[in-house]
Amino acid sequence: DIVMTQTPLSSPVTLGQPASISCRSSQSLVHSDGNTYLSWFQQRPGQPPRLLIYKISNRFSGVPDRFSGSGAGTDFTLKISRVQPEDVGVYYCMQATQFRRTFGQGTKLEIK
Amino acid sequence: EVQLVESGGGLVKPGGSLRLSCAASGFIFSDYSMNWVRQAPGKGLEWVSVIGRGGTPIYYANSVRGRFTISRDNDNNSLYLQLDSLRAEDTAVYYCARSPPGDTPDYWGQGALITVSS
Image 1 (tube, rainbow over the protein chains, first blue to last red):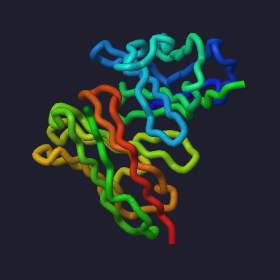
Image 2 (cartoon, rainbow over the protein chains, first blue to last red):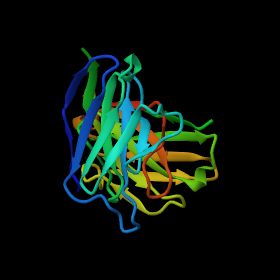
Image 3 (cartoon, rainbow over the protein chains, first blue to last red):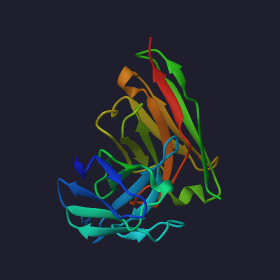
């Protein structure tokens, strides 16, 4: 199975400042169809996960444009341009390139 | 509005069985693959299984293969997960989530808690 490794595991940030989370896969996530099925999810306390970004950099419906995704191959990044109070939660990367999907360990975003 | 509602969770003894259901509405169910993802208390997300639009293909995480069975009923817009030979480490909230075929889960249910304990 593909192993997804996120860093950092915890990220204290100041409101209005940027935040960045990295995700590295143990093998390339480029699918045979040419797509890279790397996505990012946000999970607020007590809530189910919410899709933010799919195929590296595509924002899902209703996701604010302060969230952006980038990367290629095995290295990917989620950026929040200006952290807001409602961004507190845990963020997960996930690969859907391989049949057995796998998640990163999660990164807890908290306000300083 | 896309809605996914899980049911069937509860307390079960080790070695026991349980069947989870997920009722879907607000979209054409047969157009989407469906997933089960779980989250143990205080832990991260673990993908469990996926089933294709027509019932195939089916894939499982290594941790549940041979014990869990995913299925779907497109006529009734329902997804199921049969959980057998349950272990304490299967204790988790189980989410159903739809995904475009071959792609990432986009909408998720609120989850159903399964507790495996004697």
